[in-house]
Length: 84
Image 1 (tube, one colour):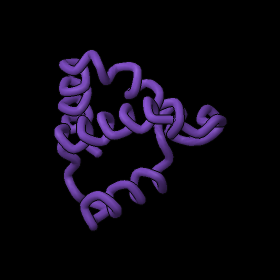
Image 2 (image 1 turned 90 degrees about the vertical axis):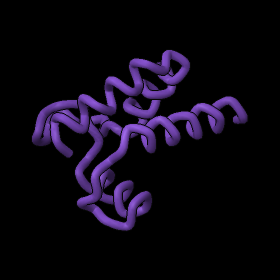
Image 3 (image 1 turned 45 degrees about the vertical axis):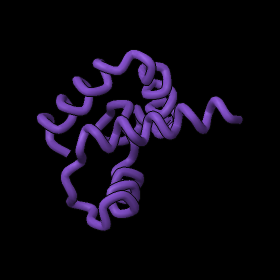
């Protein structure tokens, strides 16, 4: 995923304050607990998880992630968390 895509996603999430807590919760849930032991030494989901999500969402591990899709996913997560 490119830096530009990440910035577009971050900007979209920042414009949705109701999703901030959900975004942080999902980031924490998808970040490996021992992230500092493996490259790239930053708290991000594993490449395998990201590939899985891209294939299940778009049918292609090299698909371009759309910020609107991330917002829809976070809204779904928020609803799911509230229902539990």
